[in-house]
Image (cartoon, rainbow, N blue to C red):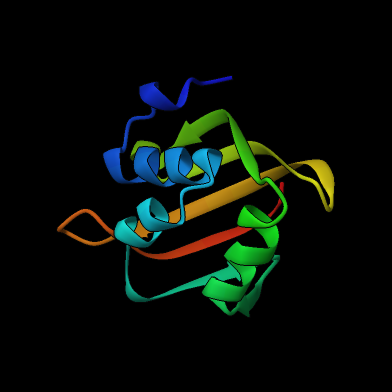
Length: 107
């Protein structure tokens, strides 16, 4: 596994750290207003999804690998609802270093 502190892209690193800390404010700070996301190819309401899949269920990202300059990850993701699963994550990052969109799904 890759220690989150060693992730190449600082924005993705901040995202992973916010998820792992269960820090809503830190996650909001790394996302642009109106950011979007998809899960297994279907667009989801980002606020609802993060509350259900991350914050209220103890979501945690253990990064197995990174590619595309650190903006694509393979993660062993776990939460209290689904247990652990291998997932792929891809991030679109704005020039000012915030996430405009992320996509996740089974890897």
